[in-house]
Length: 163
Image (tube, rainbow, N blue to C red; front, side, top):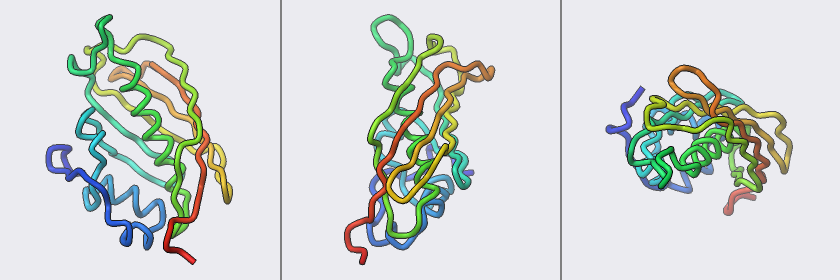
């Protein structure tokens, strides 16, 4: 596994992406052969595992993520969950297809503190069709405690430039 510091950030070449299955794309993010998005650098997350229908994203909770109440901002948890679930759906896509989040629902089950250690967001596909994909995500702390649970619906579409 490539360390987050060694990873590149930016936008993948659209022509290269069109020629990859969704699983190949996400595995490229894990391996570091494709760049992570700039939000990954901002929050400090990494995509560490990818298989068909399942993706794991990790980040260390830190003081940089705190809201005015002193807990990790809910947007950090939402970003980790949206990322793992959306990419889990993407792993199911054929070449030439993309996906985007249509909706996300999150239940925050306990506060996330800066002492939570390594946050682990695991996304798993519930269903994947021609136009819609659905997934669920679980955010846990370094002790395996469930911090938040989410579900998403993603729109699947043909990328521009495909016949």
